[in-house]
Amino acid sequence: MTHREPAVEPLPADKDRPYLGGPEPAVEFGRLFDVYAQPLHRYLARRVGTETADDLVSETFLVALNQRHTYDPHRGAVRSWLYGIATNLLRRQYRQELRALQATARSAGHAPGEEASHEARVADRLDAAAMAAQLAGALAELSEGDRDVLLLTSWAGFDSNEVADALNIPVGTVRSRLHRVRKWLRAHAPRGYGNV
Image (cartoon, rainbow, N blue to C red):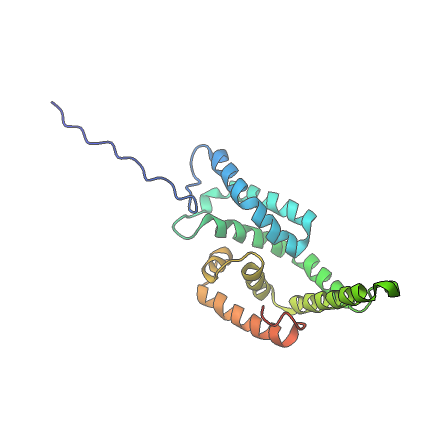
């Protein structure tokens, strides 16, 4: 009788750290798209609008598919990797975003008036428009790196480790940037945004 080694079952793949180098990446990328496309789109839409976010989500997954060999599940979760790709794509949109933020900041105080019968609603809308314009102006003054850290934290809901993975920077750098940005925003953002 010959001695046979027992068959060793491979460990099931971690859904947060999948292996992307298999012969059929379409199945795994379909799952990734189903799980991450919508939250990624929400994050991107808050930064650059819905239409641009549509394009960026598509481009993010295309880049991810083409660069799947660069993903290392030992370095971080696939979510962080995807958001890192999206953030890099956003940087290409930086000039457009900056112009839009500056234009919004300039438009503060230029909202058209409404009828007197809607006085309370008009006042609320003007206050909200002015606050949004001031916040947009404050965001436009931040450096690209500081803005990315702040928005990944506040809009995408990332913790410091996830931001570090996404931006490929040390977690200590994330924490110091976030501390600096929050302190700066408390001094420069409109009332009501001091707890950013």
